[in-house]
Length: 142
Image (cartoon, rainbow, N blue to C red; front, side, top):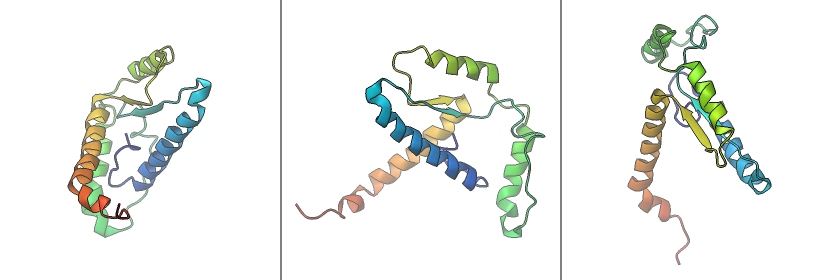
C-alpha cells in the first residue's frame, strides 16, 4: 500500500514503492502482447515480524519531527503481532491469481490496505476535479 499512498515517516520507503508501481505498470504494458501478465502485490499490515524485532529503528535526530514521528513509531511498535492480515491467507490469494486468465494488475491485500489506498486515490481524484480548469489551461488554444 506504500506504493499507492504515502505516509509520514517513511518517505524513502514509499518513494521506492511508488517507483516499483511505475516500473510494473510499464512492464505489464510492454509484455502484454506476449501473453505475460504483471501483478503488483500490495499488502497491508500482516502478522509478520516486519514491525517487530526485525525492524531496525534509526535514532531520532531532528527534534522538530518528534511530535509527528513519535506517535507513528509508537503505533507501529504497539501493532506488532496484532496486525489484521494473516500471512497464510495472503499467500493463498497470491496463489489464486496464478491460475486466473486475467489476473489483476494490482492485488491489494488486507482491509487496512483497501482503506488506505482508497483514501489516497480519492485524494488524487479530488485534486484532479478541483483543479481541472487549471490543468486544462496549460494547453495551446484550439
